[in-house]
Length: 121
Image (tube, rainbow, N blue to C red; front, side, top):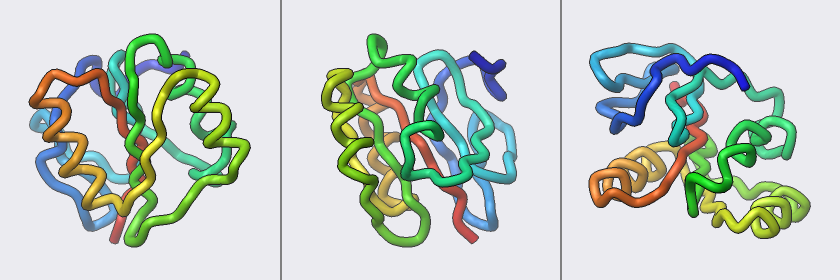
């Protein structure tokens, strides 16, 4: 597993301009927000299984992965959805703005949630 960019969980304070702000940090690029920490994420294809492997590795610590797919909602391939279903993790794709808001609410409620967030311009 790679080293987290931020070794903890934190809500997303802002998004846009190609990045995110969280925990007093400004980050340019996409993010994986997982129970083990927040990771810089450079997906070749954010909707394929290899790019989401780190999230699947934490299947025991979360019940839901919110997939922020950029400026509009896109859906991952059936094989990706199936891999998450087999792992017992719900996968919810939505545009990145909605994903950030949903992630923050569920995090505040103490839910076991993660987010894969594609940066938007």
